Length: 414
Ligand SMILES: Cc1cc2nc3c(=O)[nH]c(=O)nc-3n(C[C@H](O)[C@H](O)[C@H](O)COP(=O)(O)OP(=O)(O)OC[C@H]3O[C@@H](n4cnc5c(N)ncnc54)[C@H](O)[C@@H]3O)c2cc1C
Image 1 (cartoon, rainbow, N blue to C red):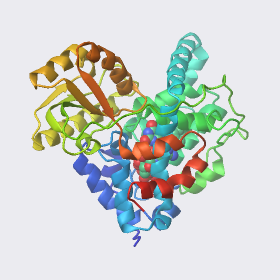
Image 2 (cartoon, helix red, strand yellow):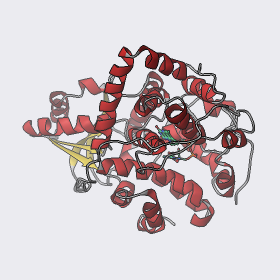
Image 3 (cartoon, rainbow, N blue to C red):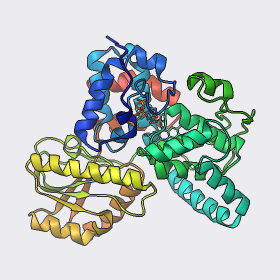
C-alpha cells in the first residue's frame, strides 16, 4: 500500500550521514512512497527543505553502502512490479549507465581529456573563464539556475529535474562547454559518479542519443518548482553537439567466481562499501584491507569526506564480522604493500568486489600485473546484479527496460 506522508526533514536533504545504518533508515522511511506516490510526484522539485517525493538515496547507492538489488528487493516485497515500476526503472537507469560505460570505457577517458583541454582553453580565454565563474557562483541573473548552482555547492545534492534544467541552460543558453559543467557537478555532488553524471550530461547535450537533446523550458520549470522559478531568456532551441564517432561497444570482461573455500585477503574500496555481500559464501577471509580516497580523484572535498566517513563505517562493520581491518589511502595501496599484507596473513590471493569504470578500476588494473609479478592473484568479483543487467546496456535504455522483468526473475525478484 502506498501512503503519502510528510516530506523528509530538512536534515535529510542537507545532511547525509555516511553510514549503512542511515542508508537503511532512509530506505525504510521511503518505502511507503515508492509506488504510485513516487510515480506521480517524483518530477517535482519542491526545494531543498522538501525532498519527501524522492528517496535521497543516491550517495548511498553510488558507493554501494546500499545495493541496487537490496533496494529493489525491499520495494518488491511491498509492491508488485507494475505498482513500483517507475521507481524500479529509475534505480535501473543507474545500472544501465554503469553497464553502458563498462562496455565503452573510452568514453570516460575522452571525457577526462575534454575536461583537461576545456580547462586549458578557459584559462587563456578571459571571457569564457568569467562566464564559467559566474555560472558556478550563481551570478548569471537566470532565475533557478543561480539558485541550483548555490544549492549544489551548499548541499552536494540536486533533484534530478534541476540537474536536467541546469545542464540544459549551461549548454544551450549560456553556451558553455558541456564537460566543464559535468566537472562542476562532479566536484560538488555527493553522489558524483563517472557513469550517471558524464552520460547524463552527454544525454542533455545530444551526444549520448545522437541528435536528441534536452531543452529546459520556463513553463516546465515553473510547473515543477511550484512556481518558485520562471526564468527568462532561455534558449528556445537546442541543437545537438557533435563529436568524433565513438568506439564500438566491447563485451564485458569475464569475472570468474572464486572457489568457495578460497583463502584470501579482502580488498575493500569505495566503489562497493558493503563488500561481504558482494562475495560468495564460504570463503576463508583472513583479514581486510580498505582503500580510502585519493587526492587526485575527479570529485570534490564533500564527496571525499562522505567516502572517508563511509569507509570508516565499513571498516567497523568488517571488524564486527570478525576481520582485522587495515585502512590504506589509495596512494599507499601499492602492489608491494598489498603483497606484504597478504603474506603476513598467510595467503597469496586478494579478493575484491568489482569496481566499474573510474579511478578504483584504473588502480586495480594497474595493481593486477604488479601483484602477479609478486606471485599474488587479484580476483575481481562481479555482483550478480551487474552480471544480469550490464550485458544488455549495449543499446539504448528502451530495449534495456524491456529486459527488466526477465532479469529480475533471474535474480529471484519479481
Ligand atoms: C546532468 C545530470 C547529472 C547527474 N549526475 C549524477 C551523479 O553524478 N550521480 C548519480 O547517482 N546520479 C546522477 N544523476 C541522476 C539523478 O539525477 C540522481 O541519481 C537522482 O537525482 C538522485 O536523487 P534520489 O536518490 O532522490 O533519486 P530517486 O528519484 O529517489 O531515485 C532512486 C535512485 O535511482 C537512481 N536514479 C534515479 N534517477 C536516475 C537517473 N536519471 N540516472 C541514473 N540513476 C538514477 C539513483 O541511484 C537514485 O538514488 C544525474 C542526472 C543528470 C540529469
